[in-house]
Image 1 (cartoon, rainbow, N blue to C red):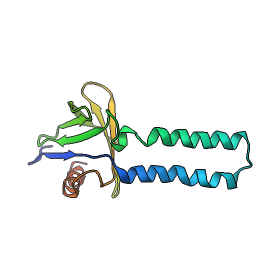
Image 2: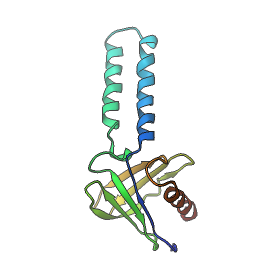
Image 3: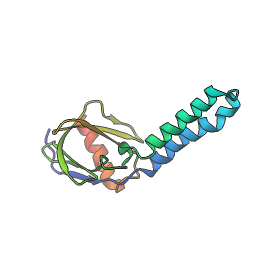
Image 4: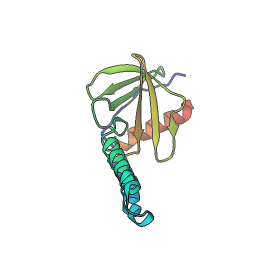
Length: 142
């Protein structure tokens, strides 16, 4: 499929998704002492939630770290170019299992060099007009 324009989106880390991930970890941690008797099982769950939060709070899918996709370019010919935090542009293909929802985009790319990268977009990562154009083009291309 061919389009008239290129959509070039420069992304920042998503603070909205970081807050969401934090909330999903804090709420269970806060309620756990009321749901279980103190003991090894409760401490194992607390350690599990804590470890999960430490891993997810700087995850590349949220825009943090060297592997985070910080620039997505959807060219007029339908091809994609993605750039990570190191600034290396790479040809990529948008995977069919990517998700487009009213409040969240889950874009999964297969890199030409091998491997996959995922980027979650909640709306606070870039200029709203560019994100609107990206969503509209994803709707047409689907």
